[in-house]
Image 1 (cartoon, rainbow, N blue to C red):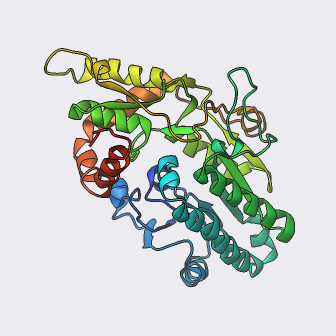
Image 2 (image 1 turned 135 degrees about the vertical axis):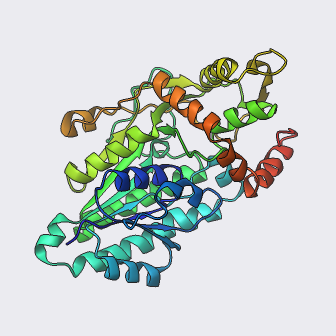
Length: 361
């Protein structure tokens, strides 16, 4: 078996960062399968567009014929599944796409991988891995004083998005226990960093602040999230792929719990210094509180003790160092932001917030 891997969803935010690091570090060839929906962007991969160790394939994880062809042709030693619809608000407005991609798509991918794996030699079967990238949202919501999510926490998803990811997690678990497929699952906390599509909190705030638009905060902004720098997350996935125990789940977190309003005010203060408003006022003045999201989880927190103690992984970035790198990247890549925000994203934001009586795009 060669050192080729197949990555699904490798043109999206986390997937693209993973693919870039894998290729740049010379870890092998990546066959990158991505459907290129609104958040999939080949511009994320421009640095390696001519690299022979990056093979991009435009396609859907629900296309069994294509999956069989790619597995047979490239003979990967691992499949890493990032492909997912991942925005909670979009799942509230249109849950069907989330069921099709996250549940049905994962099923077709597992079936194709199971057939491929079953035809490998004994040694290659032993060495093969299927790694499924999931989210902490499958665990539901925590109270302010509750202990952080561990890998044994009961699943209690509260949105169509998190329910679809929970279903995919269960399928992956079942394929290991029923068929022996050598699976690994990671459940991560909120990621942030370069190439983040500007509908999520941090890139949206940066984009709207610089554009002079309102900074929309759900409810009172006291919802708490654990923030994980995307490059730390990618390093964790590489470590789990390398040394994780087959069939196990690993929670990946940044040990950085912050209320949303604190994150937004931190961004405003940084932008006040790095890119001051022409009128001399603070970007904090653009904060606008909007009606809270339906079924909004109040707190997520990841206990990443297991991956630290068993695999030796810990995040390198603090929230302070990671957020500064993130703001600097967006300020240095305004052309990327302009290209991303000029299409379907703008239409969706206008529709979404118009329904809430807000003019945010």
